[in-house]
Image (cartoon, rainbow, N blue to C red; front, top):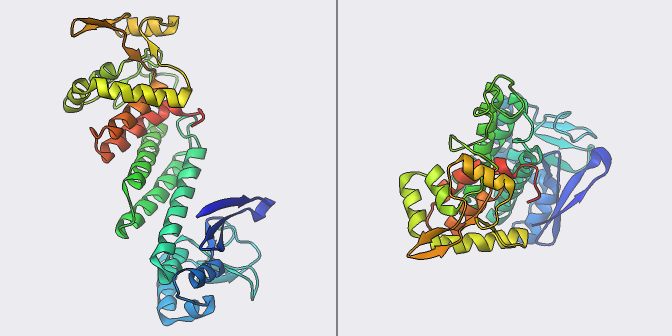
Length: 337
């Protein structure tokens, strides 16, 4: 689906096209009338909203969910916002278009065709991830309740995708990464460990952490130094074994991101030199195979490229990549991706 956002005050909605039919999302509700039209043009399963809504199977489902959640099945109102109308289905007028919440819209999409159902799953997943990223959680201490709600939303998407067998490696990496970030933010918010949430921590305690270890953000590291400092023994050994291949991939990724060559130990900035001294790291080139080399070094904001390089070379599994990318995201907060 391609997306188009229309902003009109409280009437803000997003429109996506599927098989030539526009489908609107608004306040985390999907227009069920649009879904029925999309089903007619897509799968050869023409269906009218009224026929679907009035069917015995749909009514049993809606009544059961209403009893479980305590929410009204149907409401007629000009306000679609979920905060104002908690009904499972809201209609703008007696004969107006019907808008369903997440579960209802997914239920109808599944009745129409699996391709449309998958698109709606993806749509909700992208919307939730976008909302989480827009909060820039690592930058500002969020209220614990807000972080918890965002995490529960991602868990809902994750469970739904996995239960339907619709998740691929990209989905798993993105969702696990964001869940890891939310989990870290929730723990640090409630314990006062986010930057600015405590004035009693020591200078070492106030340093950011990567996999539980303190990070000196002014100390750029080589790929091998980063692996030795932060990765487990097995992964660190793999990086050391394939450092040449991984190093080339990392340099390529850095050039694509910054349109510039990576920094080396030959010409260190004052900050970088002081940072490497603090970590007792060499300031100049090291000897390898009898030849002098000048290693490329990278600061924390680009450590996510280490993980991407390892994935490109197939030396790290998707789950581990998701964990490491979640840890790296704190160093990218507030930057343009």
